[in-house]
Length: 490
Ligand code: GDP
Image 1 (cartoon, helix red, strand yellow):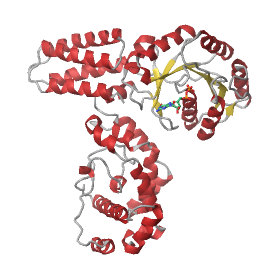
Image 2 (spheres, protein in one colour):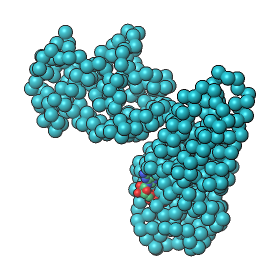
Image 3 (tube, helix red, strand yellow):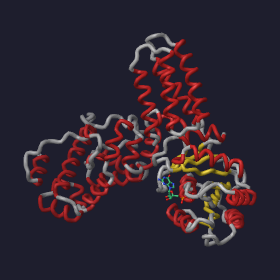
């Protein structure tokens, strides 16, 4: 997310920190670097000028106040951080629920912006909060939009009101109106109306959106926009604002190579907050938009708060409680537990995404890119090819069992050996931890909340990109895997 911009900020601050006492001309230079970085990220010129001149004034004032020897570079970093948070909207506003249900949310935006996908994510977000949302299929224009919404609804477990087939057939205003009436009758407290977009802004599109708006009086009109389109996103937003009006922005495709122009310009240019962020095609790739976390990412400090939240969600529930009890009893960490952990981690999204939220992720870019996501699938296949008894006690895995597991999972025996070896290392680490020791090679404080910590086995069976984080490999004394397992047992 905004990698190039993040690298430019990091470089600018690295050069500031490397200096001793800072002068006004150092400030001017860093402001020049920031200005160019923002322009290259396709941030609107007027936004860039306002941002940079504010930083320049505040940073020069800070130099006068700070004594030599105090951490001037850090103070300037804080000034830039604060200015970025404000540029992104300070405290993002949340959806206002109507005093009398249902709350009506209308989605607007160009075709392909991600409205239909977003409709499902938003509905799931509310359902997870205990609301009872329903989706209304008022995009009767785009081929297959109605079917797509039905599929999205099915995946999210949300009902869809779709009385018309779409593909040019049916009246979208009527469908929207009937959808609200249906929601009231069936006591749904939130209605999300998906509307048609066009390839570009045109009068017909605006008129249809206005007609739907007037028919259903939405509590929130959310403008959905593809973050990868940079300043074009801002121009489209302004056209929608003039034509239809909206209350908040949803940025989509933040997982792609968006440079940051849309995110950093849209709040200033439209005066409306960014409320949600979409970061992928799956239902789970969605979050509230947090200006401070986004600023933190841009400045290379990662997004540990989001990581912690996701981990807490993925590692909560019955499975996690059972695992905690198990460890409290002193039971061994087994391959069955390991399999459960892989499943929980998969819920958090791709490994690349998880690692990308860690501070300094910019510097690990290559390793993160090289992380082989299919390794998780392979590891899972190997563990699933074991019998429950083998998973509980991998020491029984002799040569012939390993050959059977390799054949069953379609992998090489060497891969089975390597997994067992790494798992054994992880298991040892767990034992040491239980005995109160912090094992060498343990990932240094992931910043996860209590109860959400990833036991080291989470990485034990996979090629984590940072080899330094892996349990130290013991040199095996025997070439025979069965013998080796016995030796390790000893
Ligand atoms: P609509 O025309 O506005 O309803 O757009 P869709 O919801 O059909 O989305 C257009 C395409 O973008 C689809 O292929 C989606 O899977 C994809 N898409 C939507 N949101 C995201 C996102 O946040 N990230 C990525 N990578 N793709 C997305």
